[in-house]
Every structure is written in C-alpha cells, then in structure tokens.
Image (cartoon, rainbow, N blue to C red; front, side, top):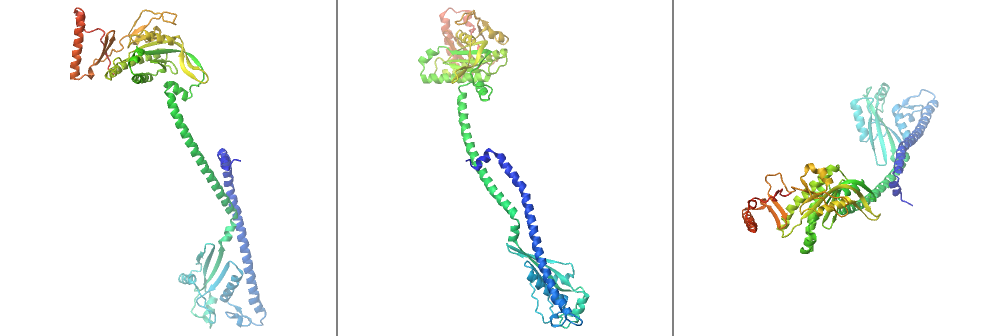
Length: 541
C-alpha cells in the first residue's frame, strides 16, 4: 500500500479538495460553538436569576410581609427592625441583607453594600483598596451615573467587579440626620452614602469547553498541518533527490553530447539535438556544392616524419581547416585519412549559386591560411610542410542517413562527390580546380582558366576543369608575403617578419639564387625582370 505522501504527490487535487472542505467547515465550527456558548450562558444566567428571585421573594415574605401582617398597629422602618415588633428594614439594611442572600444563591455572582458610616451597633464594613478608591471618586465627582470596574483573576478564572454610588435622597437624609444611631447627621441630598458592588466570576475552563467544536476543528487542522508539513518535507526531499539525479543526468548528457558533437558537423549536431531531424534511415536528393581536399605526397611525408609529429601536424591542419569550414557554414562530412570532404546545401542552403560562391571563398581562405601555416611549420623545423590540392563540384547527390538501424552515418552518395575528388587530384599543390557546373555559378566573382577536357574514371562524360587563378592575389598595396611553389622552386617570404639583420640575410640569399640562375643560361632581358610567377599574397589570410 502506498504511503499518504505518495498519493499526495501523485494526486495533488485530493489535497486541494481536503483543504477546500476544511476551510468550508471553519465557519460551521465557529457557529456551533457560538450557539453552544450562548445556550450555556443563557442557562447559567436563568438558573442564577431564578435562585436570586426565589431568595428575594422568600426574604420579602419572611421579613416584610409576615412582620407587617403579624403586628397589630403601625409598622415602622428602622435599621434594627428585628428588635422592633412589626418593623421593616430601611433601604440600607435591606441592601445589606440582600447582598448576603444573593451571595449565598448565586454561585458566580456576588453583591455587597458597603459604607464607611455604619449605624451604631453594627459591625464596621471592611473596605478594600478598590472600594475605598471608588467611594472617594464617587464623593469627589458626585455623579450618580458614574461606574468603576476592576477585572482580575488567574489564568483559569476571571472576575469583574463593578461599583456604583448610592445617592442620598430626601427621605434618606431626613432619616439619617435624625436617627440616634446615625454616625453622621449632616447629610445632604445628592451625597454619596455608600457603594453598591456586584462581582461576577467566570471560569475559563468552562468557556474553553464551550468552544469544543472550534477546538476540535483546530486540533484536526493542527494534525492536518503536521501531516501536510510532513508531506511537503517528503516531497521536498524527493524533489531534491530528483533534482540531484537530474543534475547528474544533465551533466552526463551534456558531457556525452559534447563528445558526440566532435563526431558530427555543427549543423547536424544542432538539428539532431533540437529535434529538427529524426535519427532514422532516410535520404533526399539535393543539389549540393561538394568540396574535396587532399595533402600532396602525404604517404611520402609519413615515411620521413615520426608518427607523433605527423599526428600532431595533421590534427593541427584539420583543426585550422575545420574552423574555416565552420565559419563559412560548410557541413564537414568526414576526414578520409588526410582528405577532407565537405559540402554546402544541406541541412541549410542559401541557393545553389550562393552555396557555390561561399564554398569557393572557403577554399581560397583555406589556401591562404595554409601559406601562414607553412611559414610556422618551417620555423618549427618541418622541411616540407603540407601542400594541399582542392576540387569543387556542383551537382545532385543523395544526402541523409545511410547505414543500419544500429549504426548510421550522415553523408552524401553520388557521382558528383566522386567528381570533386577527381578534380582535386589534377589540381596543382596549393591550387583549386572547379568543375564547369561550379564555374558557371561563380564566374562573375572568380578568375579562372579552362584546362583541357579530361576523362576521369567513373565519369562517362568529358570534364572541362577550371583552374582558379590569383588565389593569393591581394588588393592591398601593402602586401608583405610572397609564396611560390613549382618544380625545383619553393619560396615563401614574409617581409613583415624580417628585422634589419634578417632582411639583409634574405637579400644576400636571393642575390645568390639569382646569380646561380643566371649562370645556368645566357643572361637575357627576361632574366633581369622579376619572375612573372611571383605574386604577393595576403599575409595571414
């Protein structure tokens, strides 16, 4: 059986329903308690008043009616009426005796009639501080409507005392000023003779019991709050555990995705992880511009270089070329040994013409970057740095996921891809060869010359290749790099890197080279002119 907190997590609507019912029951509990409290208060007051009235009726029957009826003559009102046959009590005496009667019959009500001027023969009244202060205030202000109250008690029982002044009327003044037992004989109408005090006791425990429904509701609410807090704590603990597991899973997935991204082109990686492409075996036929590059004499170089050095050099080359390809938006299909296969047109395309132009710009940027890399490699002691041939072709290919359900590869298949590989094989080191289809799309932005038509293995038609010229031409007047590669000639000169001594040494070497060339054949005017093949190249591109 599932614990309650599991149900609360899985079905939060139950929790909301319970809370709604609990809130709806609160006014019901308050109403029931107020009704119970009202009923209890009314019952207590009715019983108390019934006892008081019964006591007053009995006192009146025994001490007034019976005395008057049993006496043959005129009845008089005196304070010591019990000593005078047929006499009845005066108001002050009546108040004193009623106070005792009410106190005896009212369990929670007390009554006192006290004065600091008792008649002779009566015990003096003991006044506490509240009574003395009340009497003094009443006499000072002479206000018949004045009331003094005092609330006191303990934690479980409270009481209220209420005092009002007893004002002398004309009959009272006449009686007190003429009576022989009166301690004061100069009373005036409106003087305060005494105070009348009522005390009401109230037990808090009984009142608490009157709120049994509300207390029950609060007790249930407290238990529910404790249970709810426990559920929340368990939920928080459960969520913290889930968040921790999710963080670990996300970290693991992020690490795995970063590793996977190294095996995919950025466009494919983005389309897969964004959900744009499904990982299913499917292909499309699209018009692509295919780029293929290969390093000249790589097999021969691998025999002269140590494996570690060759691996480092090759990785550096791939890193630089991949960065350029990514900056131009190429989809790098794969590295085939020392070759690079990339294409434009999928998964994103800007149109066949624009794709071809961007691909050519990328190839030129790669060749120019290779010039700078060759200089760096020479400084590091590489005698024959990489020289790369490149071929570009435009045509329709099948592109998509090829393979099995267990393992697949995103690549292109078709004769046009093979043609790009064939074109690079006839390019000069450091050169770029275009197919006619590509040249037709970029002829307005490139200078190229047609080569003799050739027939390539696997291609049924004759191919007219176009050699791109002016790859290293720079529109900048301040170009500082000269690079030339030909049979028996390897020249790279960067004047920006030469200081005074290095520049003088380079000048002496070039002069010796010119002298050696002149000694091979008779001097001619052509020998004295700069070699036509020497073209300044954009340094650092």
